[in-house]
Image (cartoon, rainbow, N blue to C red; front, side, top):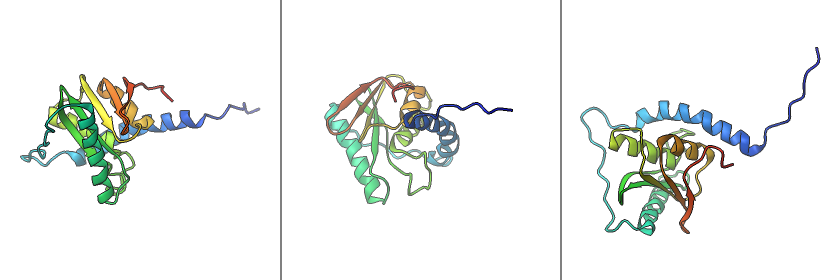
Length: 164
């Protein structure tokens, strides 16, 4: 029997596949740890005085600072809908020993929990840095309409599964 040689996957394709596979794992395992216990309400989000993109990005950068202060990777994210923050999070990869606890993933989980639904249509994700393939795929599946990242407010448009 002769083996057929297959071309190796590119790095971006391997990352995308790994991220797509991790989404199911991350959402099924980590989402449980983010939810408050029965009878507990999620901590209220202090809304900024205005809903300007710069103000929302400043909150994402604040989340990044919180992650650093906690000894985690320096990433933060905010999800806004109609000018109101509906989810926010700092990276928890190191502090929770969860490779899927990226700030964007945690913010998506937070927003879905607070809104009581998995459909985040009409929402914009503000991230302190460009979302990785796993996080962009999660935003796509959640129905998030726009991705904005970095202090320069770079608008990536709608999330896609094949951007890499």
